[in-house]
Image (cartoon, rainbow, N blue to C red; front, side, top):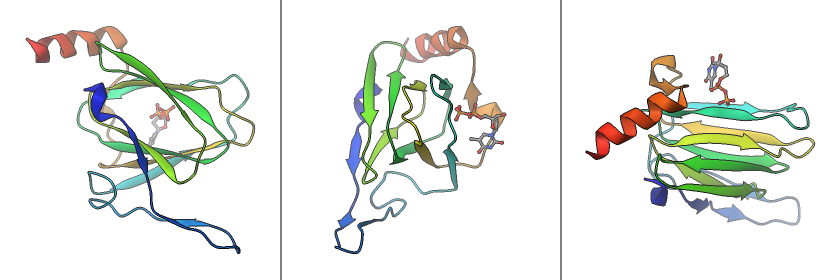
Length: 137
Ligand code: TYD
């Protein structure tokens, strides 16, 4: 459900020497962290994402720069602009996501609840919609 996907404000330790933010799996976010990956060197105009996950929970953070995340649960859509390294967008399972409008130098980090598993992906939007409709019957 798209209502579950919301911004989580992470702890901040502000310091004149530079600020610090930390994330504890199962504490600040509603899952344990098994994997971290990040997108970087994204060329202007590129789009990432273009898929949904069956079981995976994620927290997406703009470590540097900014980008837009378009979420779609098969019924409702919403767009979130990420541009703060102390904020993460929680994305629950069964959410189609597209990421675009990357600023120059943007780094998009994802904390993920599971190891990489291609079988957990929907890469076909129509198949995703068919399964959403099955699950809501
Ligand atoms: P994909 O998840 O489609 O990227 P995006 O972040 O744009 O959604 O992954 C792109 C490719 O990288 C794909 O071939 C699978 C590979 N990949 C891994 O091998 N391990 C990973 O943890 C991830 C996220 C992707």
